Image (tube, rainbow, N blue to C red; front, side, top):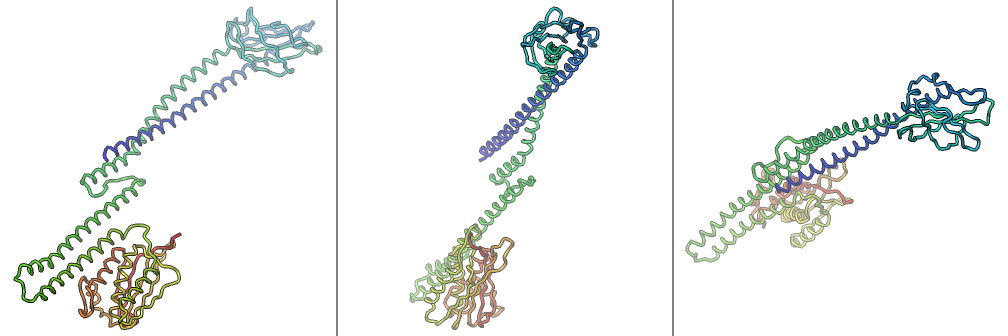
Amino acid sequence: MNRGGLHWSRSLRFRLLAVTVAGVAVAVVLAGFVLSGLFREHVQRQFEAALVQQLDQVTARLGFDAQGQPVIAAQALSDPRWLKPYSGLYWQVDAMAPDGNGRAGMLRSRSLWDTSLALQVDALADGAVHVHEVAGPQGAPLLVLERTVRAEGMDAARWRLIVAADLQATQAATARFTRVLVLSLAALLVLLATAAWAQVAVGLRPLQALQRGLQDVQQARATQLQGAFPAEVQPLVDDFNAVLGRNAEVVERARTQAGNLAHALKTPLTVLENAARAPAPSDGAALAALVHDQVQVARRHIDWHLARSRVAASAHLPGQRTALEPVVGGLVRVMNKVHAGQGVDITIALPDAPLFFAGEAQDLQEMLGNVLDNACKWAQSTVRLTAHAQGEDAEGPLRQLLIKVEDDGPGIGAAQRAQALERGVRLDETVPGTGLGLAIVQDLAAMYGGRLDLEPADLGGLRVVLVLPAAGESV
């Protein structure tokens, strides 16, 4: 059990840690992709916006001579990179023929030196800006913006203005940002994984304490789980301690009952042993009577303890439910046969709604049978049984079942009622019985959380009030 519990704890820790770290890793990777893409897009837009300004500047400086040829004064452009060969910033003017072909590089910046930008023929609306990426001088990647314009008074002549800039610096900046981002996110992943491990370790620590407590209980170092536990674990600990307490009560009750039974049987066995050692009497009837009396005493004690043991094992089991009316009907039929010669009339008054006892049918028969049998023995002519339920809680099911059995016999005085519930006490030796009936009923009812009360009856005799737990109707 110890190794299994430890394996379970480690397995749970590993699974929680694996799930947490995997979730964090996925989140970090997705965040890295998103941030890298956003940065790349932002840099690209900034770069493109700056290049649009350069294209606007070239467009503003474009002029035409008397022959309608394009002219751009290089000194009129403000950026010195236009004049530095292969500086990474270039402009170019292409002639566009009506058929879509034309002459490339009619005018170009000094930075292009002896090369020109070769672009595919692109159908451009006047004033529209297209963006391309091409290979430029020395194979450098370029971002190209192009626009078509017309010369005033010459609608057929169209010119394509081109501005290009080297993308290597932008790509290097994006790569540097990506490297820093990857390192940062890797460090963040390590920190989050460490935090997840710490969280799992701290979160499972109460379970380790619970495991140690179970080991202490298993190895008899403690009788219950002890220690301070979080609010989420404490109900489990309380329920487990309640089960342990219940088991301890059952064991203690069994030990006590065994001791009581042994003590109770010691006296009749001693009497029988002494009778066996004594010289045989001349009158065998006296010995037979002695043996019979002592066997009856031993049987009463055995019946008593067997009844207590049976109820102790089943009194608090959940889901027990016994209908009252069938049990009462069966017992009344039996009593009418057993006491047929006494002329006792047994009447029953039960409500229309069915009543249910929260316990076993055998225990209900044991209690009601003793009560009815006792009433029939003492009644002169009438025994009356009534029952009803009381104490509804907020959920609706009934909590208590009250069963009243009264007779028109001589009754019992207030001073003798407590004595009548003692084991083996018979108030009138002329009436047959063992003196255990009402005592057994009282003990069984108490084990179900109920009680037995003796009261004067309206009929003039004794009223026995049996209060038992009730069960609601099944849904």
